[in-house]
Image 1 (cartoon, rainbow, N blue to C red):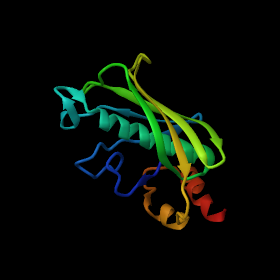
Image 2: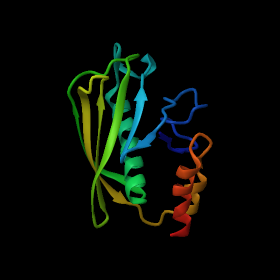
Image 3: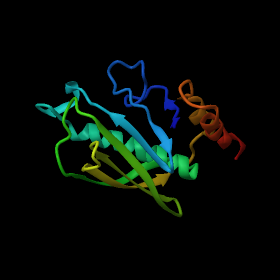
Image 4: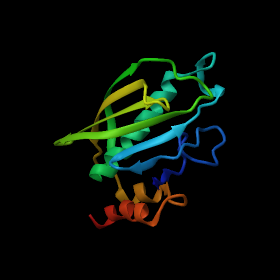
Length: 162
């Protein structure tokens, strides 16, 4: 299990950010996932997690899987989101994502939320565009590597050699 580094100000992942979700993004077997239990402050309706929060989690997962599989920094360009069942507050779920393909500067990925039995509650497919004029060194410096393995840190820093 490889916990991924986090953007230092991440609403979704920063552990000492009390207003955030404090999720651990894991990279394993060509997938990125996080186990989550979302509290009521993030509900859109009584005991139902707001769809925007769910999209945000899945967007972060897709960004990570694109980076881990391609070493490309992608920016969300177009998405299609489907909600199948309400994701309830204070219940355990897994959000997961996979890399689909690259076509020139276009990068495709998908992600979903499932319960412990594997039933899908929401799914998003997305087109990302490889970022232009992004400073790789700034990108690397803005991540916190304190919870990850030396191998994952080396993977991120390998961009500096490119």
